[in-house]
Length: 304
Image 1 (cartoon, helix red, strand yellow):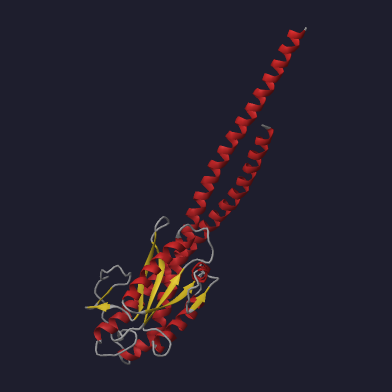
Image 2: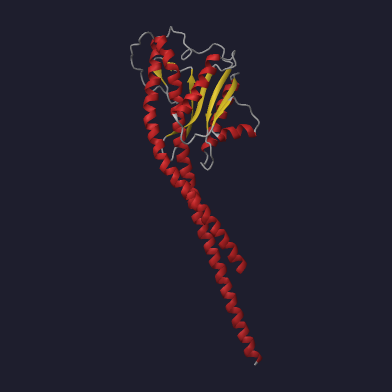
């Protein structure tokens, strides 16, 4: 019985130490997700306005053959930027992103396109390395707090590969797989086509849900629409990537907070269970000692 009590006490101490860690991680994620949500709220209007402006140029000047808006006739290679987490303990956040990416890759391969993955986050890199799959480039170390410089670096590489095309070792189209932050309890993995921009009948589908977001605004362009597109192309790519990184960061932190809250609650229940078992073992030991004492006293009384 004494050995059982020692085992239960050791387990209680171990779970209590784990509970402190999960509780601390929960509080850290809760404090950081507030800033991440604010960053998303500040970034989204700019990305949306810039995309709508670019789309307005493309829809009003259909005679311009520009890389930003013109689909290539024979698409051979498609680039896919996959945004995952650097660290674990975030529930199914990275798993959902990889599942969505795999569905997109399967679809593109069925269309006869060669898929070129670009990875953001150590989880995605580990996923590909473990399965010995090839990928084009990787960026790690900033998934929970991305900076604009990170988006610029990624955007420059993707833009250069898109300009090069399949013939030059690049890609003919670009897709982004990221996790959209909807609320503290809901984060949805999404796919958007970054380049070329999808515009149909003067309306734009920003979130990739297949439904137009409304009519595009009217602009006057100086010196001309083609010059505006040349100037807006790198800004558009960087803004969309930065917004995707911020959305994914907020989703990662929210998922981590929820996962750590669940882990803390489970640890609390486990401590209660082990405490009850330890008390039962202690009570059984006391009962056995009393029985032994009573039995010994009775034996002495009978002997005398």
